Length: 404
Ligand SMILES: Cc1ncc(COP(=O)(O)O)c(C=O)c1O
Image 1 (tube, rainbow, N blue to C red):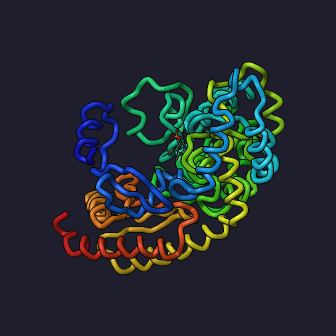
Image 2: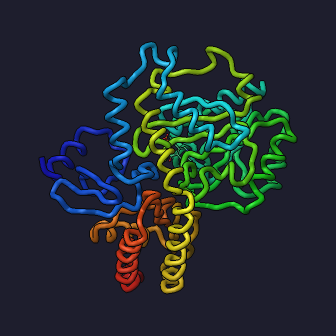
Image 3: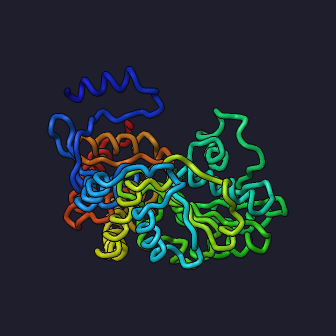
């Protein structure tokens, strides 16, 4: 098979929901991937923030093989116990914010948010959910309903009732929106899909106070930010926010599809047998891989590494912004979740396409942004290599920016 055959088959047989880049990835190792013709690309996307240790990391492969040889899916699914799941729960206990005492596993991020919303309604006996404009919480009908971007909502009306939106990072507006019908407020610690928006330091701790003062639960969506993406293991923990639910996915298992939600002891006591479930929830294979990934993050002090690499990358991006004020409007982010915002969407598209031509994979975000979220264990010289390509592309695009 060649890339051309692959393009033809996927374009004719797959439901078209993505505008794909013309590159057919056959394999990956670390921060690099190769297409079917053997061309190498540096990956600044990490499978959409998922391959936290890079592609096909040896600890991920070892866990897959060792657990795969033992058992992949439990008999009677969640109705039996599993040492692989118990191991993962034990390491999660070490890294989760201390007040989050109980965990349930899902297959994706959307599913974790969906469950959190459903169980928050049950726990409080209330109906309404507040989320932020610009947020992204998933593509199921309830998580699309909680997503504050019209492009993910408007075509699917009627959505779920009793959802309302407030401006992100605006405490006064949140306060006005809270009443006795609000079961939960769901927020990302940094809005990822909405354009890597970092709120002010005191925003989330104050949100927690407002929620609890109103008898509403706080759901922190750490699906993109969790597991060291922004530096600390979780921002919920580093900010000392006592969320009632915290949802996770993406980096948790370094590429294996797995999600989870954690709850406080109080919430866990309100959840009863039969309230939730799922065929694959906590399958031993996913649990074994996640266990290996989290151990690697801890043993290799990846949180510190991310802070160092993130600071170096941000410094480079700020210099690039200063050198290209004609095309760049802003650079922002935290840890290794970074974004360069351009004045025009057409320029961001050109930068993304030119980066691909020069062997660098980046993601266009919220129209005008280019997001950089590579593997968390990326080495300094790999980061430099990608940023050098980015710089070359910016120089070319700047010269042509008046006609783009
Ligand atoms: C903050 C956030 N929440 C939820 C989701 C949905 O996760 P999934 O695609 O695994 O359903 C995403 C995915 O990008 C996300 O970034």
